[in-house]
Every structure is written in structure tokens, then in C-alpha cells.
Length: 389
Image (cartoon, rainbow, N blue to C red):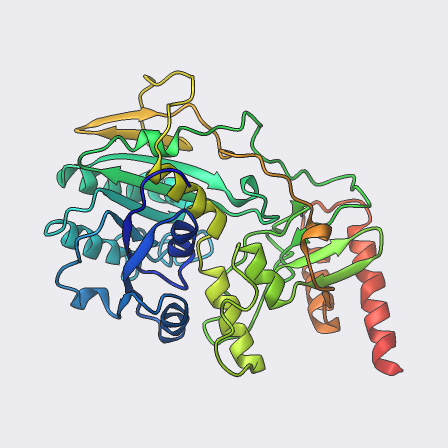
């Protein structure tokens, strides 16, 4: 990084995905807030010099920092969540961020959440966010970005908000554009030397199918049962799930980032939950570099208005002005290959999990890739035979 080093305060920090990325970009975290006890222990281990607080509702003020971050809860606005909207009990805690901004003046505000925020309730959550930011005197910009842009073989599309009372947030989010089309994951003929990710917990209404990557790593069970996505390698017939160490790497963390005490199978589920709830580190590193050194806007039409109830993949505004940004989900185009990315062999998908998926899949009306279900049947037979030896 060649730009300015800044101080950071992180709210709803989780295990520090945003803050670790900003750290790699040269910034320094001095204040953290996270209510989950296990995630807070991870933060204490990796950010030992930062002040660490718990319930955001008890935070009365923030230290004087350059960047305030908030990956506020997605529970009420995720496609896999309750879908009650941004004013729900969990996601509504974003109001605490706005409360603190009334008595704090960071140069930059960074918000992160799921891309479904653009569509849920005809975009009501987006309108709530931008209205609240404008009421506080902020200019704002947002962009949906895909983690695959940064060399991670994980389809993880997140909306990043950058806002400022004094600076132009467009120069942070819209200074990079790879020129590549957004990723496609068609179901049909497969490439034998590639890997294919899917959700083994689904198969009836959805699949989560991804070419040479895994679908979005989720938080998993609230009681600590791990449910990482599955992978099929056609050329070997392997069907399994990544180990937690590769799960951490799929989010851009160093191996064992969440391994801070003695390991148990139950705690493994909590580690997957922490990883699934995190922000991809390379995504926030890119953002941190641009916060330090804003660039020039990419070429395109910057005057198209946002109208109606449909929010585009990227936009900006302030003082009632709302416009589209001529960018896609790929600010960078770093290469990746799932097989080469994984350091550890897959954990074979269990017979129970495989048969459960097949039962749902064969009752569904979903379309599946050529040879996929046959490969899962062969895998089930192999696992069953191994258990008899």
C-alpha cells in the first residue's frame, strides 16, 4: 500500500474479516465490538491491542477514528434467513450504527451485507439505508462484488457500502473494473478437470451449483452442527466437503485463524459458523487499499438515474440524488482453480448425507449436470462398501 494509513473501529466485527483486510492494506484497528462470545475470543487473540466491547447497545461513543466499519447482522435480510426486513430484531441493530454516527465523525463509513438486501421487500432495506445516511449528511456509494474477483474459489456476492460526509465514496468503490463479464455457473456439460460445488443440505428446491468454486459458505446450525458446502471432482469421482482449514482459506484467512482453544467436534461446527458469517479478507483488503488511495472513476455513463423499486448492482448518491454506477461485480479478475486452491483432501460425504441429498434430488424438478447424480450414487456405493470392510 502506498496511500495513507488510517485508524479503524469495527462494529459487529465477527472474527475480523473486514479488519484483517484493512490491516493488510496498512490500517490499524483500535476499537472492536462483537456480542458473540466465541467470535470475541478470536478477536481478542488476533487484535490484542484493540479495545474490545460486547453489546453495541451499551456503547455510548466511539473513539476518534478514520474508518468505521459495520458488517451488521444479515439474519432478517438473508435469502436463507427470516426475510422480515432490515427493521427486524437482528438486522435492525444497524440503527445503533446511525445512533453512534450522530456523536462521531469518522472520515469513512463501511457497511457490508448480503446482496439479497437489494431485492427483499422490493428494496425497502436499501431505501432505509440510503435515507438514513442522507439524513446524517453522508454521500454514499454501494457495489455488489463477488469474492471470486479476488482469487477465492467461492461464489460470495456481498454489497459493500462506502459513505463519507467529506470525501467522494465513488473513488473508492468505482475506480476498479476488470472488464470481465460477471460469473456464470451454467448447469449442463461438465469439464472433467474442474471442481463443482453444491449444497448437500439442499437438492429439492435449490442446488447452489458453482463451476470450479464452492457456493457461499454459510453460518450453519445455531447449535454448532457444521454444514460446509460439498464438492464433486468429475475426473476422480470424489464427493466431499473441505476441511475447516481450507474453509478458512476460502474466506482469505490464514489457516487456524479460528483455532484458539482445544478442538472438539462440536467446536468444529462453531468454527464453520464463524467462517461462514465472516467477510472475505481479500475483498476488504481491496477496499482498504482504495480507502487509502482513492482512484479515478472508470469510464461509462454516470448520469443514469435509479428509478422505481429495482436497485442496480451498483449505485451512488446523496442529498436525494440516486444514480447507477456503470460497473459489474468484478473489480479485479484474479485467477483461481478449486483443485489447486485446496491444501487438504476432501472429507468424503457421509452415506447418510449422500442418500439424503439423492432422495431430495430425485423428487425434485431441478436440472442437474451430466453425470452428477450417477456420480453421487457411485459415491454412496463406495462409502457403503467401505463401511463393511
